[in-house]
Each structure stands twice: as C-alpha cells, then as structure tokens.
Image 1 (cartoon, chains in turn blue, cyan):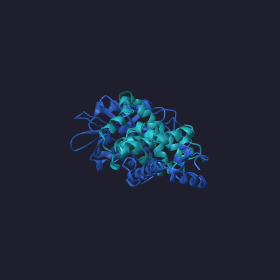
Image 2: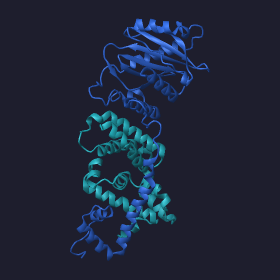
Image 3: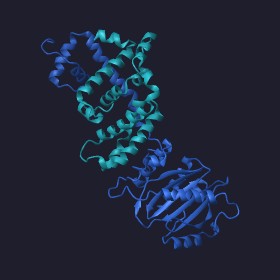
Image 4: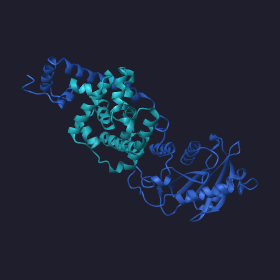
Length: 259
Length: 165
C-alpha cells in the first residue's frame, strides 16, 4: 500500500495533529501498522504534544499578575495602568516610545500634540526647588485647604481637586501657585511620616481636550509620572521613592481625581 | 465584545505560549507585557473581522524576535547543534520533567511552530499567517522540531535519528 500512496512527512505531522482527513488517516494508519519504527515515532510525537499541554496548560489558570489584572472600574483605567506597569518593569525611557504612547484604543483621540514632556520637566524642577524647603515649602498650608483650593481654582480657571493620599502614607502639606509654560500652575506638596515628599503639579491645557496614558520621565534624581486628563495636565514627582511606589501613588491620585 | 475586551480574554493564552517560548516566568510575563503594550498601541491597525488571536500572536512573535535579536550577539554560539551531540554523549535520556529544557534547546523558529500547533491548536494555515512564513516552512519546521525533541527525549544524537528515519 505504501508504494501506491507514499506518505509524506507533512501528512505524518497532520496525522499526529489529527488534522488529516479521515480517508487519508486510515491510509496512514495502515501504513504505520507495517512500520513499527515510524509508528513509535508518531506515538512519541503525540506523547510530546500531551506532555507539552500538561506542562503549560496550567498557566491558563494562573491568576494574572497584578499588572495584568483587570481591576474594578472603567477599563481605561486598567489600560492606563497596564501600560505604565509595563514601562516600569521595562525601564523604558520615555523618549524611546514617544511614537506610540499617545495612542488610545478609543477612536478619535489624536496621537499627536503636546505630550506633556515640557510639563514633566517643569514639574521635576519645581519638585527639586521646593521639596527640600524646610521653612517655606508651601504658600498656603493644608490647614487652609478650602482656601487653597478656591484660590488655585480661581487662578487656573478650572476647578482644582486635591487628591487625598493618606492611604499610601502621604498627607497634604499645602500648595502654591507657580508660573507654567502657558499660565498659572497649582503645586501641591505631600509628605510622609519619614519626611519624604511628593509634589503634584497641575496645569491647565486649554489648547486641546484629550487624555493620555500615564507616562514616566526622570530629570536628574526626580522621578515624574505625568498624564493629561481633559484639559488638565498632572505631574507627580518624587526624588525619594521607587518608581513602583510612585506609580501606585499616581494611580491613587488618578482615582481620587476621577471618583 | 470589542477588540479590547477580546484581547484581554486572550491574555492567559499569550502567557501560556510565552512561558513555553521563553522558559522562565519573569521573562515570559515581560514578553506578554511588551506584547500587550504593542498590541494596544497598534490596535487601530487590526482589521475587524479578521482573526484577532492570530493577529495578537503575530504581535507577540515580532516582539519576541526583536528581543531575541537584541540579545543574540552574545548567545548565538551556544544554541546550535553541538549542544545536542553533547547531551547525547552524556548518555542520559532526558526525562519528561526536562521537557521545558528540551523545548528551550529547539531553535526559536521551530519552537514557535511547534507551540502554536500544540498549545494553541492552530491550523497549519493559521500558523503560517501568524508567523508570516509559507505553509511548507511550517510543515518542515514542525517536523524538525518534533524530531529534535524526540531525539533529546530519547537521549539520542540527531545524526543517529536521521539514520533511523
């Protein structure tokens, strides 16, 4: 039989995978019956397939790591988080990925335009200037938070919110008004019990109304996560804590700003 | 269900494939992560109605190839045939528990084909499209991958296998 209908290797593979038509399968089966060595080979191939599945199928049931887990809340939040987590893990410099970063799943969101890098730089500088300040870290203290918010909201021309970061160990010190590239900037300072400081830089961006993913930048020893939400741009800076920790603070900040 | 949600659903499968492809868990999840980032960024290029899984695995394949290329310069010499002969000379048949090590010893392009066929249960045509290679190449890589794996599992030299065949 094998003389009339030679079995080629591709057919043998398809037979192993159960992807050969029934008729041809029977031919192969008959052929193998007379070729114990090939039959052994085919059996081994099948066993390898089973072993492979046995070894790797359990991965399907493994819980997703935190950075992949779909969190509660709107999907875009987790998308944002997943991207950022990726950057953190990879340590990719912001410039290297400038081409795609502003992309969004949602259609109609422009990939071009201000990516906020200038904002990140300015935020880092502001952090470096004000966070070491002992006597005058802020203009208006947290004890006058309502006044602080009203004042900065008025100056920025938009309702400014002050996120509460106590859940991650940072309490509000206060805030100040800063000059930004296009107008006034609100600058909030937070401090942990250990004395490490985080600053949040908030600017309005009247030019465009858009959203971006979290992005990471580093200026000197200052780490910055920054993003644009609507017409407001945010940059969270720290020189004391790890990128991962700062990310979790950034995420909380985002949640607080988008309740 | 939109593409984004379907993409999320495919994550466990990406992880399974990646684990088998690169071996250790951390590198595999790195690969998945890179793949997802790339996929999110490129989702607008995905044509609706086409096979999202194939598209996603293509993205992963490309990411993987680029990563391998980036590290290859230092590793290329260790990865070729002499390894096989050396193992055979030791005379110890690889056990099933060493399957992942045997998988790791396969040339990358053969491993991809074998894993897509075996784990993803892709048709040869889907594998060809996913990896961007002719179907004949799929078949020959699949065949060689299985031969090599079998040889390793039996602790044989691949040269000897050719005689048997």
